Amino acid sequence: MSQIILVVDDDSDTLTLIGITLQRRNFEILKAQGGQQALDLLKHEKPDLVVLDVMMPEMDGYEVCRRIKADPRTAYLPVIMLTAKAQTASQLEGFRSGAADYITKPVHPQELVARIQSVLERARSAQAQRGARVISISGAKGGVGATTLAVNVALALAAETNTILADFEPGGTAALHLGLVPSQGLGTLLEHEAADIDRASVEAVLAQHPSGLRLLSGADEPLDPDRALVILNHLASLCEACVLDLGWSVSAAGRAIAIKHNWKSHVQLIHEGTRIGFSILECRVDRQHGQTAIAIVAIHDIQCRHLNPTGRTPRGPQIDHHDFAAQIGQLEQVIIEIGE
Image (cartoon, rainbow, N blue to C red; front, side):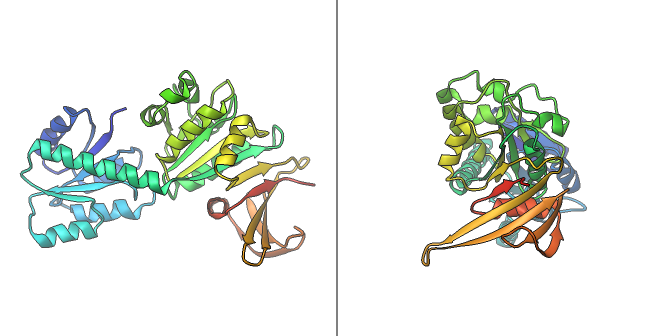
């Protein structure tokens, strides 16, 4: 899959020249002729890198870069400033605004491509070292709302950070919940052996939701552990948060994922008659004193109340589902139960 470069410049000739140069190197190009147009485009497009002019009317490149970095959904995007402003003060301002590199015009096409490739490689390495938060969700039986919870947690996280939802349930319906009809997905990847599934092939089958969330839609057949781990590794390199819908029960693939991640941030749903409620059981072990601190949060109808360990006496304020999603992302171990 070709990497996508967003080029921002108020000069149409420059846009054309840079576009041709990068397309010849197999990059896919998005163009914007101003800062606001670029920011609007980023609301529904996910480029791999931004090449940004500094001297533009209405909004200069420094301000555009600051806004990109201030938005959690685009903060991870590497930005290269390409400008005729060669003064040291201008370069320092570019780096202070969040630019990964600063290139002065004129620049030879080969140098421009080399600098872009270098920044992209650094970004990939940084993401691989940092890794994504992995949140897996499953139900003890069908019909308890595991997919509904997975979709809503993923959407809440996508409003704050680069998030992927992976539907690992055989015959999963996450795409239906999101109103998407993907032409490719997990089923496409399962046509290949684990050793033949690479990062680019995983990225190529992700469907884009208007919220910014990306989806790996489900397959009809079960996912085996080997492919599950390979696909998850690639997904984790493509995002900041990865939500997995494992369906009901924990399959062999789910167990392999759980073992790999030491059951961190796993959510289990259990049936509660005609009512759906959730409780998060957080266990933090004080290794020095051998003690376990327990905190429970119960959620009913997308409202949360902090409870004592008995689950009976409310304390503290109600919180919404965005706070709930944030808590799941922060906990070391999470179990969500629906009990009598």
